[in-house]
Length: 139
Image 1 (tube, rainbow, N blue to C red):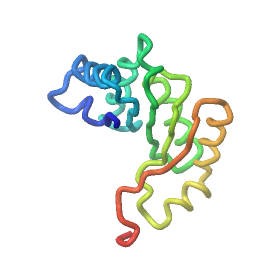
Image 2: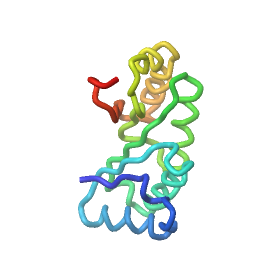
Image 3: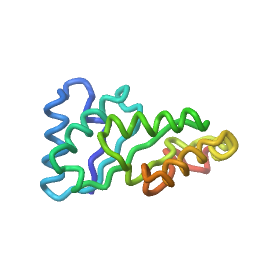
Image 4: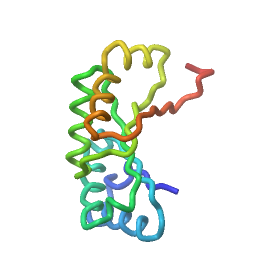
């Protein structure tokens, strides 16, 4: 069971409410948190990071996503996310929206994967994955 980060910073949800949602969820046994570096221009990660203070980080398997397909952008997004989430290690980092036939080629050829592997080697990332959002039949 998890909490998605996008809704923590949508219009009508103030910072205190976003933080409360995460903390109450973790207190009630939810242990998976989903986010993305660009949800609400980074505000969703900022709120989740604040919620993870005071020992709450230990209760969560923390996942976020990046859109960068080249090495420099991917590395920058990893660092931005880590700062906003106030963590030294992201449990699962995923390439977001792998939806086009050439997305895997871009991730590999443009060295985004290299940046993520370097982050894993440095202990900033535990696991690496990707999200799809579309049926492969319709790509």
